[in-house]
Image (cartoon, rainbow, N blue to C red; front, side):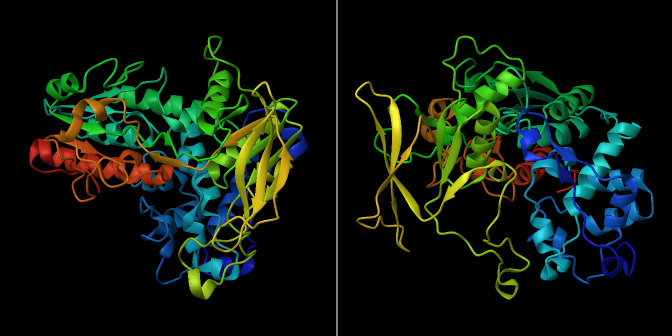
Length: 477
């Protein structure tokens, strides 16, 4: 814990943001970090709560020892705080920026709506650790002679690769894209996390012996059988990238599309990649309608504003949630309550209890609007409530239904067992699939989820693979 009476004496303080009018003019991060003194004061608010739900199963998937590193920051021992933080989380610079912070919802002080600013402290620790040079490559002192293929370089793949390399295995990461990071790089906009944070982690992994193979899609560029034969174990970390079909008539019109191609192209544009051969997806000068109420939809909102959209309306079939949750009912679990993302705060109109019935267009097949209707408590459209929203660009962002089926999954056929949701079937005890020496972790196994869950699964799968290859493991679970 921090200061015994800190939670009584010190008010909660978070990072501030650049004004919306300024930040929509660029794609860089727009948070204004707290000073070192202010971060130490926030860490001091961590109280002696008896049962720290923040780092239990309800709060932190990677089980960060939050009270411990809060106390270390309060005491001024930032270097030890960094060691403690990295003992459970390979990439706190990622989670400190984009995690929705279920730990703060589980904080005891959240019973009074003033939780410890855990996410702010976490980001401050890792940013200072890099600045001070405390984070260095940790290559294995001895090699096992075993090789592991990691297919996919998202947060699950990167976490697993790092753990396995540190255990002494030779690790090869196969990535379809020209750079590592998966949707962490290509799906999440730079204004939420700039990609040089991924680059420095890739450099760290390479210094620890991990080899990255880019532009290599398994099942297309290289056969899965070849990878399977070449390595002693294979870990599937290819994510859940198949978009959920909204079932909306008119999605074939020009100007209607799924969210990910829109976001991915913009990230490629910001990253300086060549997109000259692609059709441009651009919201500038357009009225944009985003179908969906989640994080991907919010990312579409922020990206559209930065491209110069005239208006952005976000459609959510769910009713508007309560402004404040019932603590007795939900705490310490993640509650459903009204939240406004930074992107939504930049000027989006939000329509709740509204179904998207169809995308409408002109005789040339170009989008002109979206037909909508209010819905009842069962989400059934109410007759007579229909209305048309003007739209030049419609982005469907209602989530993902599973992994891409046209790559190694198709090649493996019935040999690779899938669960009823078409994810690769594996349990969380050993992460083994139905194919010998093949494992699966992250969204490809769990389904669409958070970056912090991907890191957790990558770490746990690495321990299972280490045990499979050597008979025992000293890696943490």
